[in-house]
Length: 178
Image (cartoon, rainbow, N blue to C red; front, side):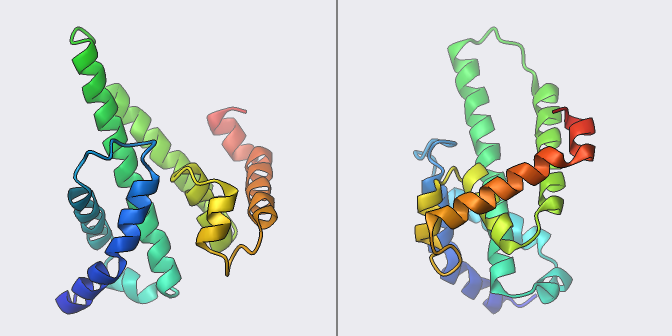
């Protein structure tokens, strides 16, 4: 791994990661240190992105999509920790259900992986992540990536295609219920 290349990647895309964090304020408390969150996101990206995976990536878009997935994962984890901490502070007699929460987290990760495998292309992956992880609205997606999504209707069409395909998927229905 080339440390200067990773440093350049960090400097170039950190502002983008910070904007993703800020958009996710419905999932986390933004009083958290954004620097710590962005460092944790890049650490996850660094740890998961082997030189082989980096070389096999189809371009900067694929790398940014994966960085966005890392962002979503870290944000969701922080949101859950914050909720657990808040719940414990409000009611200290609540039982610690860490193992249940861990099982729920693993089920959620597995579901996201199953859905990701069923998404047809980068447009679908971007719309799915932006809407269902970052909580972005179709208009925000269209404004963020106008070269990819010229209209809000295009974003809505892609979202509907994803939802329809997932509803028809028999293996998802059997495993997760209708």
